[in-house]
Image (cartoon, rainbow, N blue to C red):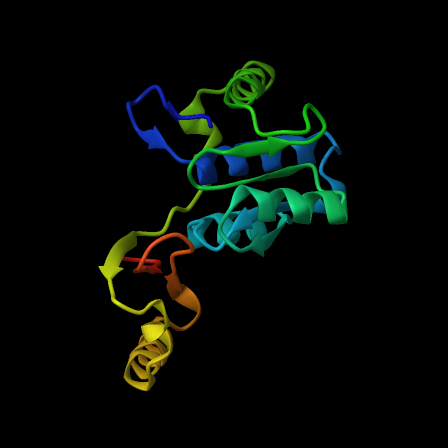
Length: 182
């Protein structure tokens, strides 16, 4: 994984890295189908920011294996997770934090821009993530829970999203709510 901060001390996520790499590779004609791959956990702002510059984001389930499978199946060259696990398939067949860091340094050098400048048009949405401890992960399918999710989706409209998913490894539900304003 690659973790980094910009020159102002802002912590960057894998979504920031994906945006920078996608924009850079598109600029040089090295982004097949003008598409990258991310997971459902990625910030909604990533999808919107990419859309503004003509890049599509294929969205997979959580897990680097799903990101890589989608990339391999469709011939995409950039993908990753919000955690900073990034795949740059034109450079390597696995995620590599050091390689990702070097690629970011290359982008800054070639574009003669600071990290914050590379992200000037990235519109990150406020996002809340909560872990809900449950005895049954299928409780996310409870009619009352489904009704509350549907009601929240209606309030958010096209300006946000709610995601309630079961963890694949423990008895918890992960709840993400995000929108264009807090």
